[in-house]
View: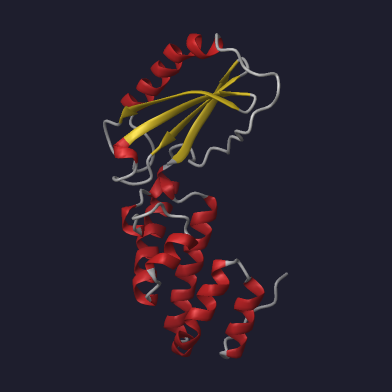
Length: 203
């Protein structure tokens, strides 16, 4: 799942999560309440619509209503004075924006074409894009292209464009993919230069 939004009520943090694709958590939203690193409660509910670019208004209202209902319960829970092990992450979905929606949708389509053309193995792609087990790139909603995942998909698209322009790079495809896997941009630069592709110096 992907973190959509968070809010605080006093010292209680509420986090709302959405599925990343149709098969993720049976199309349900997840609400988690925590305090000082201790998870107090979790609630879930069925989504009315696919959250392609975010939740439907009715689903937002359902999550807000669950927060209102859950707040008195978790506020009364005793919690250790010692910080707990839970570390909330940042929200990963931007607020609705038609231009951003178009960009993400286009990136997802381009990424699918690049992966198919480059013949990227499914296990490597799963690890590279941090996909859940059994999830294909085609399954993802555009909202699931959070910062790091979008950046990595953009690199695959760029590699595809390079191979189209420089067919000789195809022989070095696996070496580039392995370097991409560990974000070793220096290694990618060396492979490209060895293949005769001029790389502009970094500023």
